[in-house]
Amino acid sequence: VTGVQTCALPISSLALVIYSGAFKFGEPLVAEIDGGGHHDFVATIDDKRTTVVVVPAAFAEDSNGRVPELWLVPSDGKPRPLGLLRADRAVAIALPPPLSTLTVRNSFLAVSLEPLGGSTTGQPTGPVIASGKIDNL
Image (cartoon, rainbow, N blue to C red):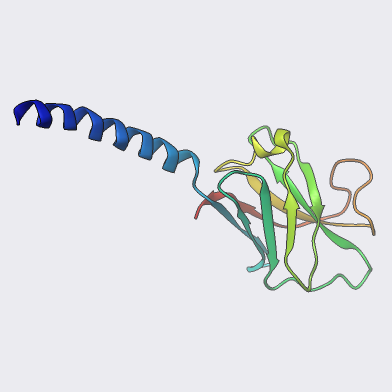
């Protein structure tokens, strides 16, 4: 019986380490994208970092015909375009592998107002109207 107990302890410890590691790296992330004192959008990022889903909360369409564009701002501070958002429904955006590795806790999501079709420069050209830190769910 002692041999069984001795064997069970290392196996259970190994299972705990594997489970803890999987939980740490597989947590879904969320960002409340705020502007003007309210949540304009809420974003969730799946646990495999392949998709970000952005839901409009209090965002109102721009009267000048500009569209909201979502940007990932990692620790280097350089915005990367993710895609256009909608004021009337949720949008799911696929994250390409180079961006999925940058979509981590403490990076930011930001929204700028851009011309129809979005920024043509790869950087925000209109005002950044909202932003929010990516954090654990």
